[in-house]
Each structure stands twice: as C-alpha cells, then as structure tokens.
Length: 254
Ligand SMILES: Nc1ncnc2c1ncn2[C@@H]1O[C@H](COP(=O)(O)OP(=O)(O)OP(=O)(O)O)[C@@H](O)[C@H]1O
Ligand SMILES: [Mg+2]
Image (cartoon, rainbow, N blue to C red; front, side):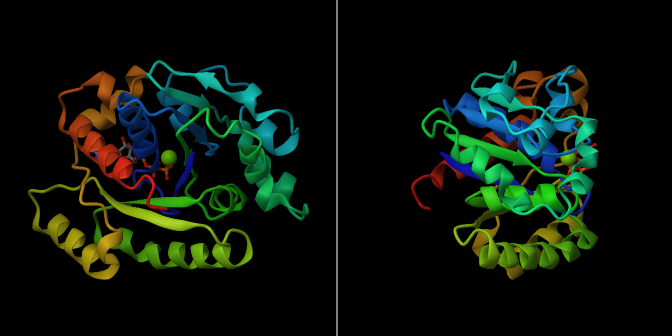
C-alpha cells in the first residue's frame, strides 16, 4: 500500500483537483484507492457529492474509533473516500498541546488492512498545521502540486524545509515522490518559463506530465464526478491519466 500526502501550503495550487482526479485515474487502471479528505473546506468530499458526512474525518482525530467505519464508497470505480466536514476547522485547537497529536493519523493507517488498497491519497489543507503534519507523518511519499506561476514557486522552499523537519523528528521514511506543475497554460511563455525554472531547481523530482489549464477540470466538481467520468476525452482527463501512469511506474521503486 503506497501512502501519498498531496500537500502545498499555498492555497489553490491544485491539491484537491489532483487528489480527486489522480484517484479516479488510478482507479481506472485497476488500482484500489482510498482518498482521505483532510481539509476543513471539504472540497474533495463535496466533489464526490457526499453531503451528509457527519463530522467525517474529525472523528478520527478526536473520538478514535475504527478508521474503517469512516470509509464511504464513491461513484468512481476503485475509489473509496474518508470524507471531511467543516467540523474539522476546530481540530488545531482541540489537539493543541496533546502529546502524540502529530501521529494520530499514522496510527489509524497502520490499523488498516494493508492489502485492501493499493493507494492512500491524502488531500491536505493549505496550511502547515497539525492536519498537514499528520499527513506528512503518516505518508511514505509526498506529491506537491504547484501552480505554474513564479509566485507559486516561492513557497516550495518552505514546504521542503518542513519536510526535512518531519523527516528528522517524525518520519524518516518520507520522500518526495514528485512535484507536479498544474494549471499550465502552454500558450504563454510565462508558464513555460516557470516549468523550466522548476526543472532547473528540482530536476528529476518534477513529473514529466504537466497538468494543462482546462476549464472542464474546473467545471466537474459541480457535477459530482472526477474528470475521467465527467469528460473522459478532455485534456484534463488525458493529463491525469498520464500522471497516473507515471505514478504507477514508480511502484516498487521506493
Ligand atoms: N488544470 C486546471 N485547469 C483549470 N482549473 C483548475 C485546474 N486545476 C485547478 N483548477 C481550479 O483552480 C482552483 C484551485 O484548485 P484546487 O481546489 O485543486 O486547489 P487546492 O490546492 O486544493 O486549493 P486549496 O488550497 O484551497 O485547498 C479551483 O477552482 C480549480 O477548479
Ligand atoms: Mg483543496
């Protein structure tokens, strides 16, 4: 079972779009995926049309209980979901000062049957708070979506520093599996330059796949479907399938 945190503290970088559509594209390729929504904005949960999630994933952090009781099926083949809800907003305060708060999620994931899913994908909120740290402590791998804008690159150093701290103190096994350029408008020189600069800096950590700007990706949350179902022939579906193929190529390389 591969465990991937999908994180970037910069808002709107493509975390949720990547979590939902990579999950669906992996599902299409016969992989079984558990998507964990760790964001109080619960965008991934809403994307799959789950309305009555109760307190959702908050229960994992405060009530304990069996993680398997939180899992719901989605309409996408191969994809299960642990939903989030606005209740999660209070979690930072609730867990402040609690011993072992950073490793709650890791303990839950260790309790899962390890051969039931091939992938656990964790959609993180746009902060480096207790939820993202829980994901980084629980995951073996980190996938970083970045928006293809110069401004968006500036936060990357801070994120990679946090990764180093987490590696030292909580999770020596954590590795960056890849940096993903999102919302690339291939027609503009600016976007091409940003991708080039990213490759200069981070070299082979950058996925070959670029996620192009595609309006269909922005539309599909309203229809409760991932892009592979909403518009299987769109550029967005093609890009997330290409990413899934690249992610699958990394299997066994850890
Ligand atoms: N490739 C794309 N083409 C067009 N629109 C996109 C693309 N990727 C993301 N978007 C849009 O950009 C916005 C931000 O994307 P998304 O919600 O995935 O980012 P996020 O990192 O999860 O944001 P947050 O930090 O708020 O959780 C959304 O409105 C989404 O529809
Ligand atoms: Mg999001």
